[in-house]
Image 1 (cartoon, rainbow, N blue to C red):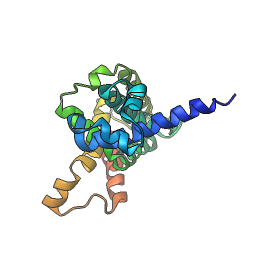
Image 2 (tube, one colour):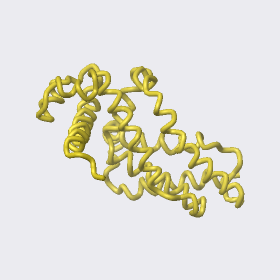
Image 3 (spheres, helix red, strand yellow):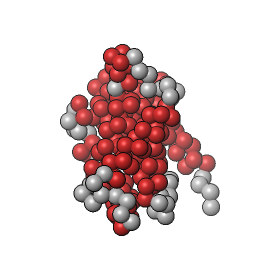
Length: 208
């Protein structure tokens, strides 16, 4: 049975508020962001925002959770369990690259949260559970790769996740300083940068 119209409207309103709030918080940080600006950009009221999220902090926590949920859902969208482990790890690395460069607000939010030493993310208990499948997926790929002799056995899922994330985050977080210092634009020849992380991870896992 389809959801009532009022329920669908509420879901659309909440989704719109989250989308706009994501951009505002990513641009101005928690302290600099103003709920009035979000209300104006969504043509709603501060009272309506508080109705859905309780407070400015509640809205920010919802934004953080939604941002992390986005990358986790992207990972679950691909089925690498039955693929060759080498192909699977490359696909996962390239998917992470695609997601990060197309969701720069996510990277800015993560950077801001780290500047504040994880003050807010520690209040979102669901993120630990939400992130577990990502580790489980990597564990599965690595286990299958070791079984076939394709992968070394002294690298953990966290090691791989750290390597991939570091590279992909750098593409967004440091694009302007890197461009100025080395006259390199990450937006050019993106296919090259995308394939590079796959090559690096695969070569590293093959190393003895």
